[in-house]
Image (cartoon, rainbow, N blue to C red; front, side, top):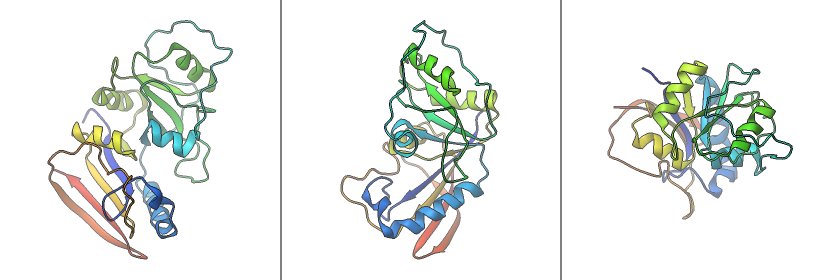
Length: 232
């Protein structure tokens, strides 16, 4: 395979939603704990999220500091920061909007802490943003001129960074894009014993007919269920 093996790993409600206030309810707390435990148990080489999920979970709405940058046009060449790492946080951020403070994530959970940031950009991203990524020590790759080419991105992640197994962890839009392109190999769902509200987003924003094979179904206590499927 010329790309990483991709496991879509998510917490979802009983009605198949992956965003919404239910995620912050007391009833979902135990499901989230199990989700993070499973995240660590997969021993993947990295995890991937879309821009919105990365912003909500890690950059907390911060904007990139574009002051005191060179302003020079940079060639559209992939960049590997000198301070790389064995575990990666892959951010699908086509225009370059996330305000990382450094090239590594700082998080209380050891499954995310110290992950090296790789930004996946389109070629029309701002020159200043690539300059900013250089300055903070983050890596980046280009995949697509105006829209993300997911197959190209995955091929580069394997070839350049040696990523063999990647956890795809939302949100709904990036999950749907991977699913539409048949780039999900396995599905891991931690099902919380709650129903979502009407504004919650589904697991995949774009659905297509698919057949799955159950690999494992495991009760995890407190009415939480883990469902693990292979994609056929």
